[in-house]
Image 1 (cartoon, one colour):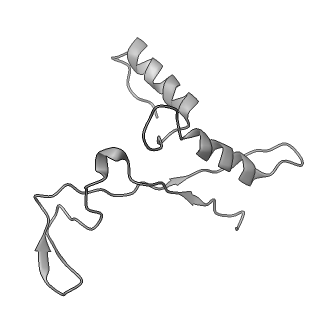
Image 2 (cartoon, one colour):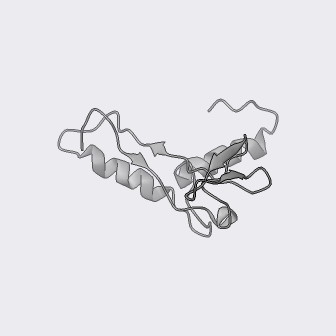
Length: 108
């Protein structure tokens, strides 16, 4: 693993997208494996979101990869199917701000 580029983190499809097509396109036609033109404008689509976790500062002797793995693991919250975009503590903090200050602009 190169220290110049953090690894991308991907996850399985969320439970809400289990039947969605990965290859579907909303903006026109695509060519399938048999060479036929296919229009998927009526189908639900799912695109995987990749997340890069970069550890910008560490104490001497700490491994940045271990911290990135910890943050990635924190994306899996209890009682929630599938991973979150943010680690669970940050997800809760963001939701708390939305509930307390519903008119505040999202600065993230």
